[in-house]
Amino acid sequence: MTSKKTQLYKIRNLAGFSLVEVLIALVIMSVGMLGIAGLYVEGMKAGRTSTFRHHAVTLAGDVADRIRANPRGGVDYQGVGGNNNCVLGNVDCNEAQMAANDIALWTTQAATMLPNGTVTITFDDTVTPNTYLIAVAWAEAGALSAPSYSIIIPTNPF
Image (cartoon, rainbow, N blue to C red; front, side, top):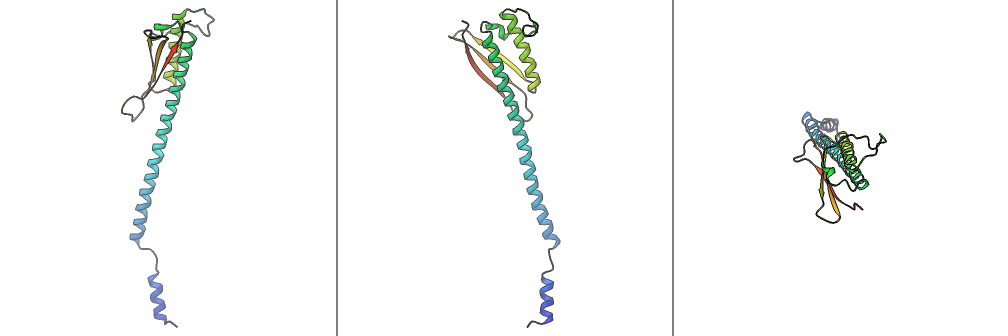
């Protein structure tokens, strides 16, 4: 049997947390929450980058399909775009007019889908079959250099 004095002493020792312990726990939890917030921000950046890359690949594929549909466009795809109503205007366009119309369409798409998006075409007729280098570039916040996507497609002007 224990005395009342011993029991009182045990109760006083089990009084609870001190203020210092609570503050240390708060600091540890704050550091953990900051880490989680940092991971969330990085995840959001990665998602944005992934979306831009997806748009660039889709746009480059669309450009490639338009070039394959007008394989005799050649050097005209390096020129300036212009809306010649070749697609929706029911106008019979030649290769150069179709190339200008395509350039106008994908320039608009690049500006809509990507921040400061640009499409650059380089035609190479020194190889057989002729090839086009399609480069899609855009600006991205926080990137050291402008990200880009490029593909080379061969064409046969039959």
